[in-house]
Length: 148
Length: 87
Image (cartoon, rainbow over all chains, first blue to last red; front, side, top):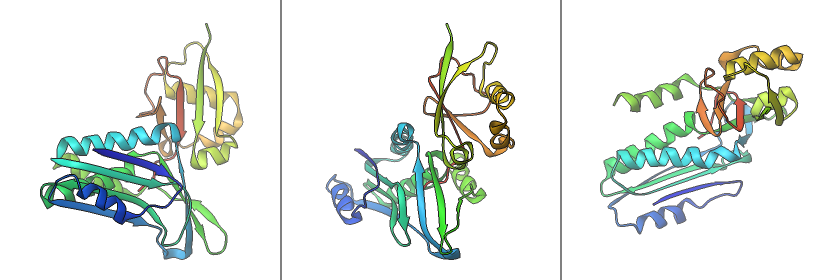
């Protein structure tokens, strides 16, 4: 079961975890990404390519599903302007054993950074803003999965 | 038959061009994204500014990521944007 949700609305990680935990696996892994408060950043604005986003997320989830023995995958990604400490993204995976669940969760997060059409703009306390640039560490994290 | 293409822009590409979407006619001989970019740069100086550093641009054709040398074929929509930063 693959669930993809792209929305401006907030999500409840507990509810999503409970939903996956009913699928029969012995392991549920989850990751929540939220707005960091460093460098005077007070908000992140997330733009996306609506016609493409769901397809891109489903491709990533399907690849994970083919690589690990999973019972279910949930990916929720928010868009719009999000304040410090607000949740941005949830990835949740359910498998029979923890290694598959944890690895698949990590893999999906790494691919969300580099293979999904989202763009982040940082808003600072003084009212200035700039688009976040691609990070080499994110590209390296994605490549790691191709060689392993 | 004229070949038309929808182009959509995102993030700073959209901001600097001052538009998020437009429809263009592809001239004869323009077969791939690279050739299309060169055509646009020649057509209007606004593109020249935004497309000056091609290393900072990424592309999708009909909602699939592609490289700059991808053939346009009969694609309906081209997206031009900076490297993605999701997650």
